[in-house]
Length: 335
Image (tube, rainbow, N blue to C red; front, side, top):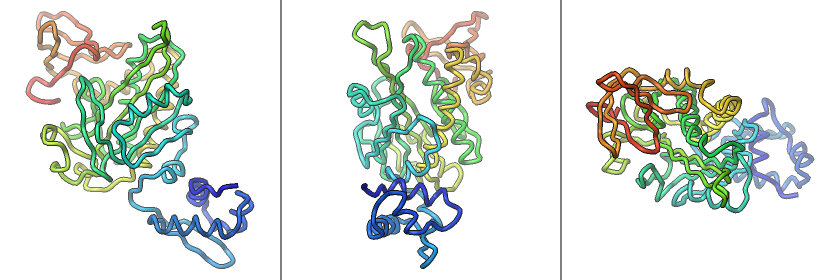
């Protein structure tokens, strides 16, 4: 049997005591030399592992932030999200990769993660790039068994999940600029893009990919592309601390599993709306709706059960705003 570095790292991370070399040999059916080679590799990657004769190995601490398939797998606590994982040091777009995997038949819950994205995809054809060691860029592949008109709500489910995960990891509040931008101190730390592919008959969903790019360890605004510097920030810039992106990914996928299960019970946002609106920065604020049919100003009241933003116009009319058709901005700025 091949010695799996991810499995050995997982055992070390979850053990409160030393693991003997013989325990690891018996578990994986390999030689002590094979185990020693994996331990040596992990040490070279920055993991502090104690080796005590007669007792075995113990993980003292890992690198502050390391992105690798082994690191991500060793932290996974989800039931289905990320059980099948593809990690890439660099790629064009994790959404593009996930769609290819969807066409190839990869299962529900498959996750693609990259340290570097050179052509990340955003709404309305926008693109962005990430530097090594800074962002958490990932895409989750889903195979839902519901009508296509429900798919747009997945974006809001992921937005809530990211906001909650960021708060849990950082201890700092995160807001949502409808429908799916995650914001700290009125600046964006995360954007998302959901894409759906239907069956040839166009009546069923074949798969959905939902991608997110979270600015985690960017040290300064100069690390962002010039066109977004005025509105972008990172967890590190806002809190002064560096974060383990694999740990944040695990927390996000755990929150998504829970929130997605709630969504599936009713196929609307009734079970999530209260928590989503607690994070909704637009709520109660004046907004400008950039509608192709004509811009207008109103007050954002909240979301309906379909995830549409309810905007009360100056004449008192309540208008549901669908995310796929329009953009919403604060009256005097981004939020």
